[in-house]
Image (cartoon, rainbow, N blue to C red; front, side):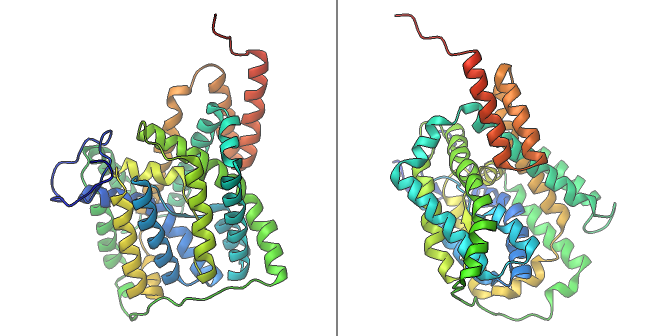
Amino acid sequence: MPGQTTRVDPTSPAPDPSTDRGVRFYLHEFSGALGDLGTFLPLSIALAVTCGMDFGVILVFAGIMNIITGWIFRQPIPVQPMKAIAAVAIAEGFTPGVISSAGMAVGAVVLALALTGGVSWCVRVVPRSVVLGIQAGVGVKLAWTGVQWLGGLPVVGTDSIAVAVIVGVIILLFARRRRPVLLYIILAGFGLLWIGHPDAFTGWSLSGPRLSSAVPTAHEAWLGVTHGALPQLPLTLLNSVIALSALSAEYFPDRGVNPKRVAVSVGAMNLLTIPFGAMPMCHGAGGLAAQYRFGARTGASVIMLGALKVTLGLALGGALLSILQRYPVSILAVMVMAAGITLASSARGALHGCSLIVIGAMTLSIVLTDTLTGFLIGFALSSVFALIRPEKKAAP
C-alpha cells in the first residue's frame, strides 16, 4: 500500500526504487543517507568552532528536521546547512545573532513566496536547460571542492591522498550494487582516526546540547540580511527548491516533490528552529544526488539519519565536536566529489544544441563566480535562443 511503513530484515534485497513508495528500514537506506555528511559535517563543525554555535543543538534540530521531512516526503530529501550563509559566517566570524537573522530572513521570504504563488511562477518561467545548468554547475563546483580538500593532504598516511584513492576505488566497484558500502567506509574512517589520533577519543565527557535564543541586535540584523540572506536567497530558490524538485522528478517518476511543498518546508523549518539556536537549514539537489548515489531510496534513510543525529546531539552534544574535527578529510573529500559528479551527470541528456551552450556557460560561470551569476547568464542565453529559434506551433 502506498505510504506504508514496513519493518523488514535489513539484509533483505532492496525493492525496486521506481515503484517503492513506502518507508522501508533497510541497511542500505541508512548507508545512503550518510552520503550527505560530506557537506553537512564540515560546514556545521566550522559554524560551531568559528561562530560559537552549539554543535549539539545543530545536530538535534537537523535530526528532527530529517525525521519530519523523511516522513512527509517519503524520499531521501536532505537537510543541509545554508551554504552561502555558512560560508560568509565562517569567513567573517559572524556571531550567532547575525547568523540567526540571516536564516530567519531567508526562511520568511521563501515561505512567503511559497504561499503567494511566487515559487510556482519561478518554476514556470525558468527553462529546463537553466535548471539543468544549475545542477551541472553546482555539481562541478562541489566536485572541485573535494579536489581542493585533497590538495593539502600528504601522499600517504591515515588521512592522505592514498586513502582517498582507495575509498574512490571501493565506491566505484561497489556503490552500484546497493550495498551499505558508505556505512563501512565511514566506520573505517573512525578506525583510521583512532590509529592516527588516539587522543581524539580521550579527555572528553558526556554533555548535552545547550538551547539558546540568539536575539540579534539591530546591527546584527542588518549584517545578517545584507551579508547573509541576500546571497543565500537565490541559491535556496534555485538549488534547494527548483533544482531539487526537478531532480526528485527524475529519480522518482510520477511522484517528484512539489516545489511549493519544498519551499514551505525550507521556510517553516528555519522559522521554527533558528530561535532556539539551530543553524540555517535548507534542502539541496546535491544532497539528494549524494544520498541516492549511495543507496537511499525512501524517506526511511533520512529518518534513520535524523534519529542518529538527535541521539548523538542529546547524549554527547559538543563533546562529539573534538572527534569530528579530526575525522579524515580524505574520506569526506571523496564523498563530496562523488556527490558533485552525480549531480552534474543529471544534465548529460541535454548536452546538445542550444542547451549545451546554456549548460556549459552556466557551469563555467558558477564554478568561477556563484550560482546567481550563472543563473543570470543562463537565463539570458536561453531567452536569446528562444527569440532566435522560437518553438514551432503544432499544425492544426
